[in-house]
Image (cartoon, rainbow, N blue to C red):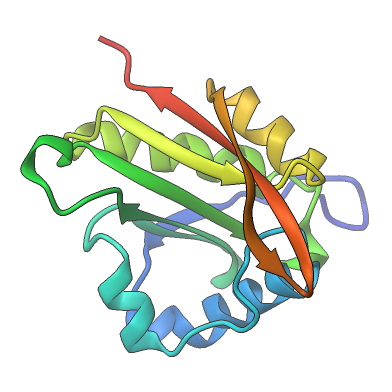
Length: 168
């Protein structure tokens, strides 16, 4: 919402390398919370580009400024899992709680289903209630806990594994 309490219309665009400086900044803001990922710094474009699918990469734009991004990472290189991907979504710190986190997942899900994905996965720290609420809002269900799966800033962390199946 703007300072007057009116929602600003968001537009969506494919995430391009020209968006990378803003996307990287938003990614780093999420990393800096200590609750979004095991990563400690946002990668360079080349690493991001090769680790994410070439489709289903989106940015949410407000007045032509990137305020959020979402992308898929392949679950496996095996053909049998071609329709399974891990979803990532990050919102600029100044825009959290203002609606981008609710509209961008809808667009990512629509795009993923059109692209032939039948299962989206999310890995979320149990201590991140906002991400858990958002994933559950969009039909993700918890399928397991990866206990003490990674060392993060000197602390062993659990990760909740959630999945969302395409309808139909």
